[in-house]
Length: 274
Image 1 (tube, rainbow, N blue to C red):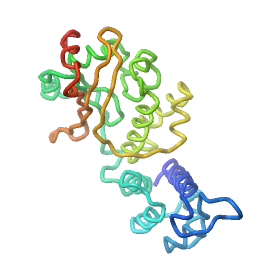
Image 2: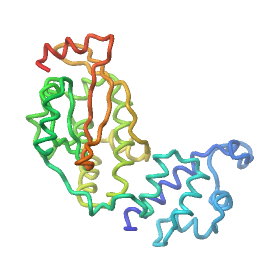
Image 3: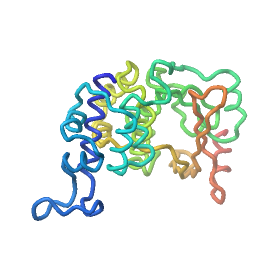
């Protein structure tokens, strides 16, 4: 486990410990009124580990935690499935080591062909959340995509630094939080790698909003959901957002914006050339 992952694991544990509701675990308030947050002693007791060892874990010390112990702590902290996967990744129990994930600048031709064949906005996202390909319908939705410097053509970077895109999202605050939580969950195995560190560092320097959301350490898995855009030329566009992973390129994933039935989205897309 590298030093950055140890620090992140410790801070993640402290944050989640501090958010637990004591009554839900059958514990009385601390003092007269503190009803949220457990002591380290209480976590270690529930997880059946020594308080000294658990304290070292939170402090980011160079100790080895078994998968079984981390899973036990995850149960005590009542972590979601995505949060537990993230915790295990921080502990070195990730399905794909960071070194095995290569950066991708462009989708393979056959996958770009698939994007082009779709009649609704779709794009390909690389492991670092770089946008590795898109179709004409997506270019109609987000007209700036082709002109963005390739170094900045990153979904997370654009959502926090492009005011044009921000104006198109009436639920920008909610959407940006979802993205950061999903990015953190997926980037767990690569935390501390050069590209990951560089991207997060750039965002922290460029966007106070990102810095605030990143500090919350939200973690969640992807879930299909409704997306609304306010396009400057055709007005409101409503999509159901889905994600697909090509079986022959699992390091990529496709984000699909399927027009929501019962809305004028499909007709308005046609006016944009999509």
